[in-house]
Image 1 (cartoon, rainbow, N blue to C red):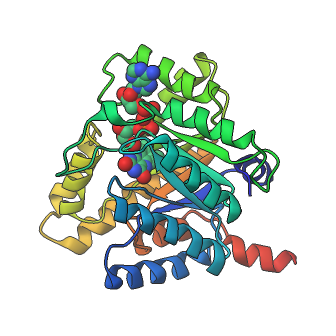
Image 2 (image 1 turned 180 degrees about the vertical axis):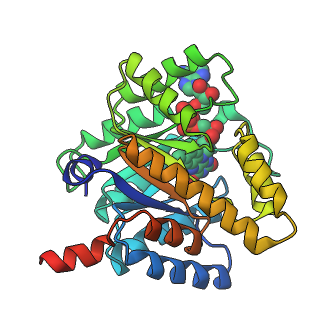
Length: 307
Ligand SMILES: Cc1cc2nc3c(=O)[nH]c(=O)nc-3n(C[C@H](O)[C@H](O)[C@H](O)COP(=O)(O)OP(=O)(O)OC[C@H]3O[C@@H](n4cnc5c(N)ncnc54)[C@H](O)[C@@H]3O)c2cc1C
């Protein structure tokens, strides 16, 4: 289903993000998570994309498996890093033939532990990948006459590679003008950053829906990993104080993290967010707890009740 139809049919949207599992045990655990979250009938689920060849195949496989074996609407991530143009086209063809409706077009994180020269990438910025997907859309190969719906990333607290926030907004605007249909944000812990970002987008003339990325902290080590991965993420003192109070008790840490994310979600809904995207880290417990506490009926139950 094209993202425009998804956004038109229901708002706010709820969506979950998964990463492709690398081992059979991790795959088993992910499929269990997917089964548990399928009941919530999220508007879409997205699947991340790595920089290495084998992990990339895992993304394609997972996307197709979700599409064929569940009721979920998978959105693959696709990145510029370590890709030549002639590699991207077959991927688009493959997704089009599987009737995948949308793609999240990203710059991508550079590979860890591998020699990498950005100048070798066919697409230097996500904007170029958006343009390429747009031109693919014009070939008419996709079963939807509009082609793929296209998402891009946004950074409420700014992207570390562009310290000049005015220039960074120009880059975001360029991605949208190139053909992006929606924006999903990097995780953030202070909603004021999101609201300010949303306003700055509006001032810049960006009119596409902006979906808020939320990641509940479930462990102290996870918190440190987030700080590393989402480089530049601000951890408000209020959150750190609450975590510090219970840092030696893992169960309490998870409760604090989930409670904090739940409060963020309530506040986002009160402030008319277009959608909330949960970074699940392939686990369902935190997301389910939050979802169940938001007072939103499981969409599948609601769906069944009305059919
Ligand atoms: C929702 C979400 C999902 C993600 N999923 C993945 C994933 O699956 N795999 C993965 O590897 N990474 C993923 N990332 C991380 C992301 O790819 C990195 O943070 C990357 O550094 C930025 O991606 P981008 O799409 O914003 O890139 P870009 O839009 O290319 O921007 C990257 C940097 O370049 C600057 N820039 C953009 N255009 C220009 C220009 N024309 N000239 C000069 N500078 C420019 C931007 O301001 C920014 O600083 C995700 C991030 C988010 C928020």
